[in-house]
Image (cartoon, rainbow, N blue to C red; front, side, top):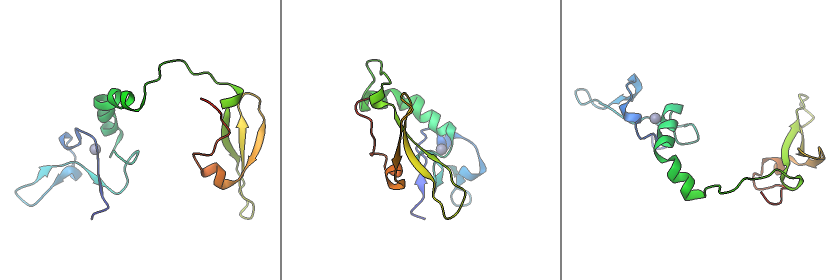
Length: 124
Ligand SMILES: [Zn+2]
């Protein structure tokens, strides 16, 4: 099955579970897990996730940009997305922006809610 993904845990193959033992009779080895669905799209379980982060976390933070100064929550960056749940089938959930400082609410479409690039926040 080609759509199985390999767990990226650097030690995955060293853990002993029945499902890691693969291969032809007499030549079985402990192998990296393959799954159609992985945690964070990369890891078979939290142990493998933690192994990866222990080994590569600092490099990853340095690569993508280390935080060098304190961030401040202000009215300009306090917008979060939320919705009021509606159980009724012919009524959809009511999505909105909420400013966690001013408590102002602004309506939002479901598409805007799902669009991770859509924000009212200006600045970090
Ligand atoms: Zn794994």
